[in-house]
Image (tube, rainbow, N blue to C red; front, top):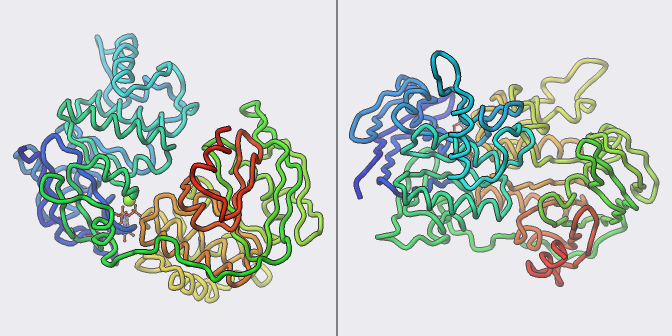
Length: 505
Ligand SMILES: Nc1ncnc2c1ncn2[C@@H]1O[C@H](COP(=O)(O)OP(=O)(O)OP(=O)(O)O)[C@@H](O)[C@H]1O
Ligand SMILES: [Mg+2]
């Protein structure tokens, strides 16, 4: 197979960080090439260099694509050569229809006007290619993440893509959607579309990759190819983190759980926007020093249930009772919930977890400014001190706490979000998909942190779609099914099969 791409000695600096250090990266024509590495290893940056997001003046080294040295100065330049990138954050315009989105930026013209009929016909063709069976006139806002992902791919295909780059495409997809996407990549491969996929999910990497390249600390560590090497998770992980990780879930000291700290009774929650009851008659409790898992399929109501307790920020029509340490509390706003010792680390760190244009320290102090303020002043020295403490204790990779959060890698943004809520000194910490988009090494750190918090007497509610994680970390697991709690399992009873049975019954 001939080479379609070679990146040679790529070096890219940001103020205070060398994100890429003499990286070499070669891709064969028609292969699926997976790019893996810890959070902050430089994966997204390398792909941004390749696609012209960072122009040729902003890095050193060479890009050879289809036997030509390329000096892209914008995304448009790389697109013109047949490179399409689908970023970690999706970039569709929610208020526009599917067909408008597919041809946005490269509209089909006829006699000086946009040819809408042809646009619709063509977009139908591309939707079919990606196996998406929806009306092209629908607005994108009504689609799920998985479907939006497919539309981005349809868009790329409509531009006659030769090299498709996907940055963590399956991070927010269900298992089934992820599987469909992987199948699609394999189909495109038969049509000689080359793909580069960044992923933290080692299992899917092993499933689709012809070649795997590992980056660590901005350097190329190795490239494993299916023809020559054995591509196994042990080997990939070892190269990613530079050490062996045998015990994925660190052990907690066995301990009798304490008294019930949080009890939730008969929660019903109605979402007017979609005209549906999202939580049905759900009750559960959490004891001091316990990790309680909440499992269930996507859309089963796990996030809605926990948000209902956390002051109901989405404004659902809600009934039910919440008791903290045996006392009935009235939580009408997240502020009330925080005051009563609850904290919520959201699954959507971009949407409502963090203020991206503010720096690390400001984000950490965000939910607990009270602790830092005297009268109306914020004690800046204290803010700096606390931010540095968290940076060290949970290992946030950033050149300084003055760095804007938007400049951190995805996994490190997640850690800032965690620090922010730890700083509120909660009694019960709700973690919603805490390790989504997080590399294996950092996952281990987060699990260790969970154990340390439990040791200190905190209680944790963990919502997670990753069954091994729920089973590996929880003392008890509630399983939700279509809005209600359909069962509860102890750690000893819980298996993936048992949880799935209850979740889909
Ligand atoms: N715009 C930017 N300004 C400053 N630093 C940046 C910027 N973008 C990335 N960095 C830094 O460059 C390094 C590489 O980041 P990059 O986003 O490429 O990591 P990644 O491998 O994609 O990680 P993740 O798996 O968490 O998405 C990190 O240290 C990050 O903080
Ligand atoms: Mg990234």
